[in-house]
Length: 120
Image (cartoon, rainbow, N blue to C red; front, top):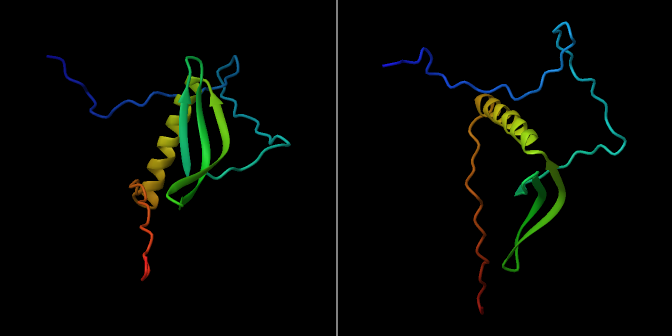
């Protein structure tokens, strides 16, 4: 019977490496595009096709008039391989956040019941 030397799960290295022919790692040279912007989201939806994965980022405006209001702000479209890289980056960021700040509550908010006044 074969036994594993390590019980720790091996995380694949999803971040591409740029190397010179001599094997030296080269860090990316980041610049910001003229139309660069920061977008906040508290509502995300996903879509996919055989060739790409999309995330639709929106802002939840809460419940009004018996409806849940969401304003879609942007759509991010990427190759499936890039989505896996993003998944690893987000996993690492969430693990660091929870280690340093605390657990993240993922229980969805419940709609508030409209208060009734006398005479209703």
